[in-house]
Amino acid sequence: MNGLLSRSIVMNLVRFKGLPILQQLHVEENLLRTSSHNWCIINDGTHHPTVVMGISGAASELLEIEPVLRDGIPVIRRFTGGGTVVVGSGTVFVTLICNKEAVADLQMYPRPIMSWTGLFYDRVFQGIGDFHLRENDYVFGNRKFGGNAQSITKNRWIHHTSFLWDYDVRNMAYLKLPKRAPEYRLARDHLEFICRMKDYMPRSVFIDKTVEALGTEFSVRSVKSDGLASFLNTKFSPSTRLLTRQELEAAAFASPVEIALS
Amino acid sequence: MALRMWASSTANALRISCASKAHLSPAFSLSRCFSTVLDGLKYATSHEWVKHEGSVATIGITDHAQVITRLQYTADHLGEVVFVELPERKASVSQGSGFGAVESVKATSDVNSPISGEVVEVNSKLSESPGLINTSPYEDGWMIKVKPSNPAELESLLGPKEYTKFCEEEDAAH
Image 1: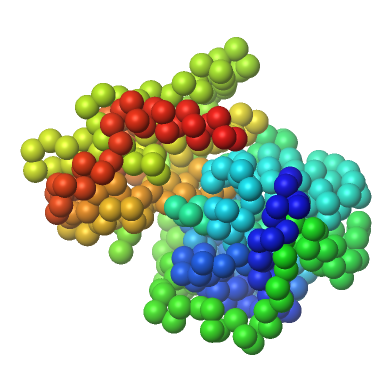
Image 2: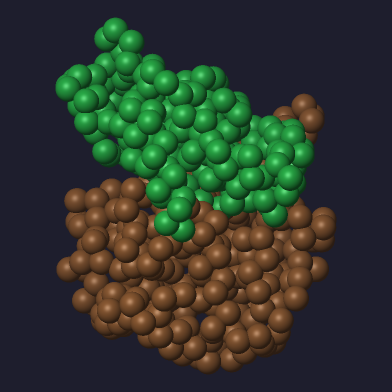
């Protein structure tokens, strides 16, 4: 990594605590599409358990719809690729939104970006818990604690991560076992596959170390969360959205038909 | 407004990925680096191709783009294009601006139009078979057909030799 050259690149850092994930995703999509600056967003927890699917996520395939409806869990379809997560107060979100030039010699394709973030977080964790990037996940050993998703435009990219600092086991019941899974998962169910970051590192230490690693790569400029509005384009309409109750009910009816046909 | 075309991705991805495993073993991966560039097409530096025939231009992404996308995932057996987002008929596209996206496992990547005009046809096969973009990027994997509003824009695109050189320089720089 070309730390010396990159340190002249400005990275705006904005920090939230408990920002609703829908709002966070709207901010991210807006900044990716309309801003010309580099951004790092850290959101320390989101206040309500929420299901977040990737851009092509089909609720009928990915979710146990009845408990989702019964418990009034919001379901979001986000603008980036990737899989489905249940997020909540135990999730720490870290997002990087960068121009093509922000990281020298980085090819604007999924894998090079993913690999670069693996090196970035290598600095944050420095071998703690046998941290590494495994396929597209951040793991301790062979257990996932960080899930990633990206969107790449002509000259900018976003890579965002939901870190499982802690989670409520009951929330896992909202997700089906995904049809598409990394090889290293080996058909393990959720609880055997994931782990909690809290067992390895205090929450504030993780955030501090992330900010520190950011400072070794870029020239960090803090932007106050209430000052962010001036950087957003009010005319921009995000694609990230909440699914309606009607859509979820329709998906619930879709499931038995799928099973019958398979 | 994008027309979302949903992929029955799993079955396709697994079928395709079994085939690609054979291709992506070390002996073969080097040959896949030499991606195909066809004569008779024009190319954009963002890796889209255009075939102009009469009043309609067909657009897709090049073999180079899909090869890089697939090579990224040597360790990930589901690295094919799994979802394609395309515009609706009659939508306007403009040169250099995004008209849709392809999704490959964790990432969506914008696809940019090499020319401006009106969308006259959209490849509906991509909803069931998004992997066509990987297996047949210049034929069955075409994405949209456009009535060009400014045919002179085609002159600003690269020919096959220039595009090949551009790809070689891009790869050498990394």
